[in-house]
Image (cartoon, rainbow, N blue to C red; front, side):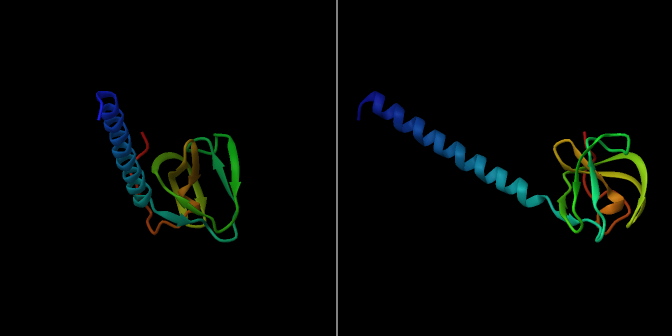
Length: 114
């Protein structure tokens, strides 16, 4: 095998190893995020930040399962599951009040958002 051929083979092997590591890391992270049901019979506003003063981005239909990546304090809301100031980050820049998500807890169940 020529030097050029060996370099190409090494580069291809390194790229394949990188993809395997990257793929397993992404899979592990996705597996650690749980989803929770939203309140039945209620459409939930998804906001751009942790509070009712943030703009509405979209509306979730009733009984939607949402991931909770982190949680942040914000506006206090009274909903199906009580009164709380905890807001759940369900996607990049998307928050819903924890008062409408059935987490099974009145407190934080995920790390605080940075």
